Image 1 (cartoon, rainbow, N blue to C red):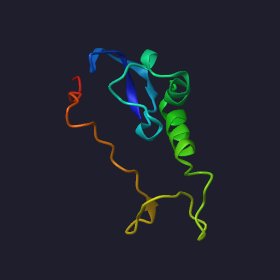
Image 2 (image 1 turned 90 degrees about the horizontal axis):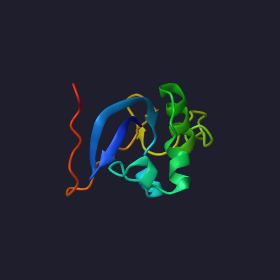
Image 3 (image 1 turned 180 degrees about the vertical axis):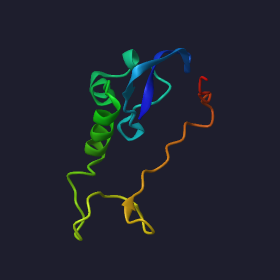
Length: 105
């Protein structure tokens, strides 16, 4: 999840950010440095836009966290944080040759 940029030009965010969020799923072939208008319609549908709470729910649904409860009854799938018994969300890093986004003040 990230705040939706106004636009992306040459892999860089320009014009600040909008008031909505979007869901970027590299596992589905999406890339955070490609503008919304440049991704296929199925990725646009996944991206949103969402208000924060709806975006978080869409993220959980997209990953299958709500639809695949574990045998012991705890919701979620994938890697678990053993100390807190919660699902861990994997960190997604951009490719090394991609310019990094710098946050605006």
